[in-house]
Image 1: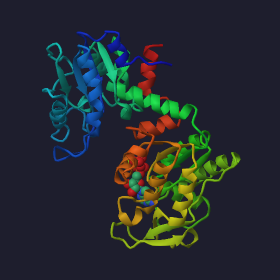
Image 2: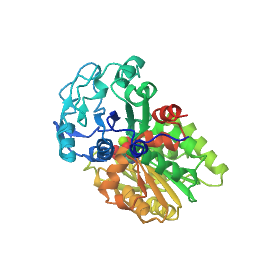
Image 3: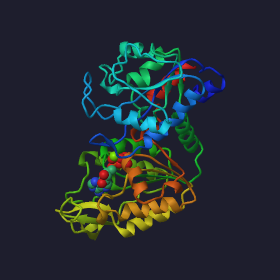
Image 4: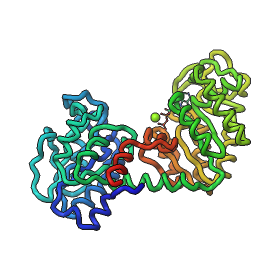
Length: 395
Ligand code: ADP
Ligand code: MG
């Protein structure tokens, strides 16, 4: 199913003199009102430029944080984003505070509309709110892949009410890159899933088990698999009630002729702290008070070898507590192996991106997704609601 794109509309001359509403993802980390990392803002600029250059009048909005609906608290305002955006665009970008029922705009202007998640009804995709917001524009643009897995009023509802709806360049590129990589991946395809969100990720592993040739687990996920394999894990992060799920994943992979590798060694500590003394232990020797905070060096080397031979690698989730240097070894070795692999690699997830930045391998990863939850749901083969709405619009 094809989706109309902003660049397609621009090429067709369909944006001149039109009011264009862009739902971006400008949800940047802030420290006391200061932007600490502006990747998402920079990534949103091409869509805005494209619309402006095509002669449109542009309204941009985004969510920021998790505000309470109905109020804009001091930490909820997009003002710092408006300031940064005007620097990047080289022109003033005024912030409009109350905008749902009308925005006063000069032709060719660009404004930022205050945090859309402060509007009552945004989260629960209230059709009345969606209708009012859609009435602001001639063309609705979704350029926010990171929230495409959520059906909210600015991501899904507005599509149904706007006269024209399309995907912005960031969303289009993301769907294109992920779609292509997953449709006919170079084999063997290896997925490596780590991190701490064990229960959400286990359900993802079940659907991945049908698609990939090899499945590697790390982090809290691996601990749950160790438990399933009958190994001691002490006080490690795991979800014992998910052991059956882990066993089901192991069986599914075994039916395809491969084993889910279970760590043979681990790095443990007795407290969860940056300065906790780290000890490498065989997986069979984990004590009752131990916390497994990383995979061990033997395990990391085995997995790295497997990754280096992959045709396609999908990576989500660090394999250890990489924020603490003593427990970062596994993730560093894995990151390096992914960078060294000739295979096409795709990575996504907030902490995964932090690990990629920490080990400086960004330019050696095939594709880095801007999405966390959306990336995972896409991998699972789920249809993202915001994307489905755009598809339905032009069907
Ligand atoms: P992502 O954001 O990439 O999807 P998650 O949020 O699921 O990843 O998990 C990342 C977090 O998991 C990191 O903060 C890391 O410290 C933590 N983690 C990894 N391994 C372990 C472990 N063995 N025990 C506890 N936490 C872990
Ligand atoms: Mg995370």
